[in-house]
Length: 418
Image (cartoon, rainbow, N blue to C red):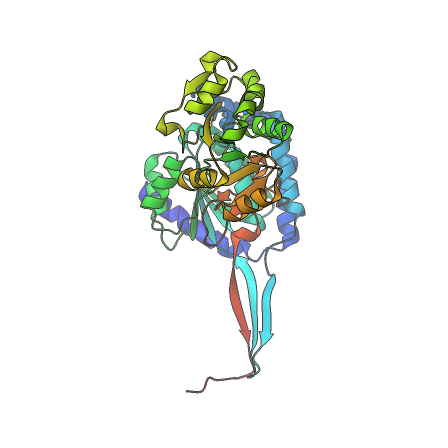
C-alpha cells in the first residue's frame, strides 16, 4: 500500500504544478459545471451515503455530520458556485517597492502547493475542500474516515469525471484508501505534501499533531463557552443559548458550557427552559443544581463531575458553571477553552470590552450565537476548517488562508557589492 500511495502522491505533486497555469476563468467554469452536475448524480451519492449511514449506530451524534440529503446537496452546490464567484486569491500584490539600487520588489500571493486534509465522517468536506483548493491553485490529498468511505468515493469519482471533461489532470484530487495505514503514509510524506489540516475530534487532531512530520494547522475541535454576565439581557440569553446549543449540536461551534454570574442564578431556569424541548441534558455545579432542582426535568438534570468541564460534547449535552465575577469567568475559559469560539451576553459596555480583549480565541462574540463561526457566514465562501492556532491562519480558513507568498525581484543587471 505504501509504495502505491507514494506513487500517487508524486502524481498529485505534478498536478499541482499543472493547475497553477490555469486561468481563474477556467477554474470557475469547472466549479460551476461541478455544481450543475451534482443533481444528475444525486441518486448515486445518496445511495453511497446510505451505505455509510447503515454501518453507523443511529444513536451516534456523528450520524448528523455523516448524513447527506437533497437539501444538503443543493446547499453544497450553492457553496461551490459561491466559491467560483469569489475573486481569485492568487497573484495579489501584498507589497511593492523599489530599492535605491533600482531593484523592483513585489510580494505576491501564490498557492501553497499540495494540501492534505484528514477528516472524520463529514462527506460535505470533500466537496468544500476541492472547491477551495482548486480556486486557490492547490492540489488536494484527502484522508476521510472509514465511516464515510462510500460517500467520499462517490463524490471523488464525480469530481474526477468533471476534471477530465475540462481537460484537467484528475490527480488534482486524490482520495487515500480508508485504512489507517494510509494516514501514517500521509503524515510522513515530507516533500510531497506541503501542509496537512486535520478536521474532526480533539483525539484526531492530537494524533495528527503528535505523528506528522509534514507541517500541520490545527482546526476543528471546539470547547465553546458562553458567559451570561450579571448585566445580561434575559431574552437575548435565552435565544442565543438555545441556538448555540441545539442548532446543530454535532458541529465544532456548538455551545458546550454555559457560565453564569451568581447574581443571575435566579434567571437560570428561564435561560435553559427552551432546551427542554430538545431534551438537552444538563451537567451543572452545586449552585446551579440547587436553582434548577424542580424547575428542569429531573431525568435531564445531572450534577456535574470535573470531566464535564473542558469537554466537547458534540451532542445534546451542556454543562453549567456558576462564577462570582467576570474575572472568574475569564479564568474558567482560559483553563478549558480550545480557543475556537467564545461568547458573552452582557449589556455593560466595559465588561463586554474586557471580555472581547482578554479572551484568547479565534472568534469572540458579544450578544450573539457562536453558531456563526463559519466561513460562509463570514462571507468567505466555504471553509476548509476553523484554525485554532496562531501561526499562518486563525479562525475560518478560506481562500486567502490557502495561499502563501513569494518575493519577485526584477533588476537590470544589479550585482551586490562585497
